[in-house]
Length: 332
Image 1 (cartoon, rainbow, N blue to C red):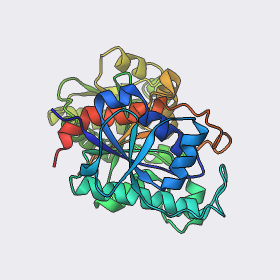
Image 2 (image 1 turned 180 degrees about the horizontal axis):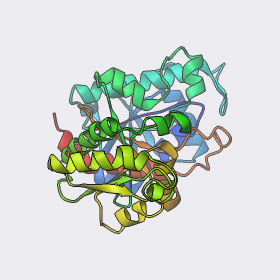
Image 3 (image 1 turned 30 degrees about the horizontal axis):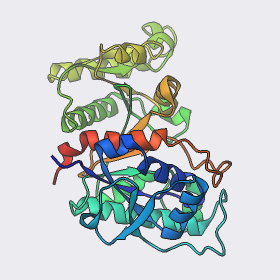
């Protein structure tokens, strides 16, 4: 069976995306599981090959089907949208933010047209997006817009641990206010749908607690008693395999040991800290609930080391191979 074709948009040209992409493309592990296609500006890719001292040769193609899948060949769909005279590594730049968006846009179009099997994204920079007139805060919002998805889900996967998020980029105060019975039920149901799409049909989902020790039955915090426990009861009555609230100080460990197939984290840092402490480089984001599959590295543009050639490609390799793992489930 042919290995899945994975589109990789170059990311912000001023960040480490180009470097980790070309190093991932040169990896034997990537080649073992996937046929990656890079979407970006050829001149930036050539610079990345130079700083990483990679011997790969670029093959410029118009569509993925023209790709040549052999060692030492980097298949590239070239979008020349960077003015090299104005380009600088490691700088917030509207031109680079706009360029990054255009790479994503082409990648999504290829996936929606079934010319690639999934998309694995490199880092983009929120400030550069804004400076370039791109009115989205990040990848998830961009993919939602381009795929017509109303409520995409973010799932982290690392070493078999899967973590969903009830809330994302809001203040902690607002996140606590969003812990409601109805929101938990709605999100949990969408998580079950996403797991089924990924082929995960066995096991139980854990709903994390919000307060220390899940509030000790209201001794310090009523969110569990008033919102989480009723949500869990009603979900169970409807046939969903779910437990909770499970204290956040133990739930991720229990899931890692196999007691749960996933965890619904109640706020951003609760799940991020758990997964990234376990293995920062191998924590991969999966955007679920869309008609296409998207995986991503879960680190930023690292402007401080961009252009030096020292950025680790481990997360990029993991993102591509995880996309390949699940791609068959998204065949269009």
